[in-house]
Amino acid sequence: MKPSVLRMLTAVASLGVGLSSAACNAYALDAQLDCQSSPHDFIAPLLDEQSIDPKPMRIEANSVNAFRPSRGSNLTAFGFHVYAVFGYEQNDPMFKQGSGQAVTPPTYGVVVTGSAGSVEASVRRAGSDADVHEVIPLILTAIFCNGH
Image (cartoon, rainbow, N blue to C red; front, top):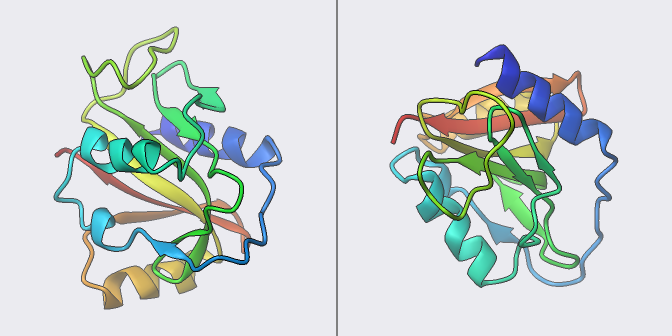
């Protein structure tokens, strides 16, 4: 993972996004994290269904947009609670531009609550090619896809 994306994920974690305890059923993003989609195809349905706030909570200099899950959306990925959703695809008006050089290739994913080891095991059991990186040891882990 590029250092700038990792810094963005750490910044998202430091924003203090609240973990909602929604009473509704979880909405699993496992299938969308098979790394066969584009960032647009991953983020657009979440916006349409109001599962994430439409205004990014953070836009990194490299243009990666981080979105907060909507109150009560109860998003999950591979059995873990989604803390944030992120993505960027160049020349897609859905994503706001940052102040620096945009990240390439396109990227999308989620930050979940859980240790990197347990998240990695769940992702691999599901057959996903997503990359897994620790954001905050034993607390937050990023699951992301690049290049589609």
